[in-house]
Length: 256
Image 1 (cartoon, rainbow, N blue to C red):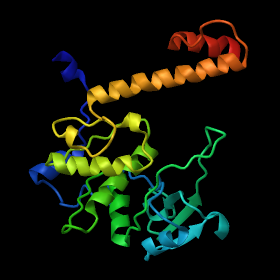
Image 2: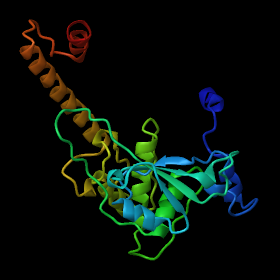
Image 3: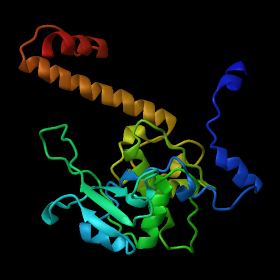
Image 4: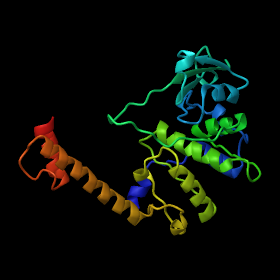
């Protein structure tokens, strides 16, 4: 109990006023926030540079590279969201193509978004990536689930050290979100499905708590087998792939 009392409250200040009905209804919109983020990585939200330009009809687009190099993923800087600068109110977007660092010499083909979002959906994705409250409302079949999944994936790539909690009104809704998240470039070791209904997931992998533990143990064995291959290639004597601790010593004193 004492630890709970000493824990810093992580609930944002604006949430209490919104729930209780105090203040302006739009006070939690990202445009009213002091901690708005002007530069964001939109990852695979846009299918092409033309799609990006079509998504912001009221903005002037400034490309930071030659036309032939403007290939997704893109990093966008919204000049009108820069606080305390001369560019406030200027409807200009600086677009920079991003080049992901290759961590392997082999070609990698990550799962990517295939939905061509409309300008309204892009605005919802942009708002969902910002601090504040975002409410997406629409009739069935208008892409609300796809928008929510893209927001989650973009938050995952922009703030990889943070955790995202997804709460839904039903197990079916959560499973729909989860199945779509799996199809994007999100590392499966960072996914955990809590609560009832996890057995209804239409996937071959187990994302429950026990399934995640088994996944970590399986990944451990795979990595230790790679250590064994490296040991044989270097003609090193000893059982360096027996435990993770042995593998760590092998890397520290032999490889590096």
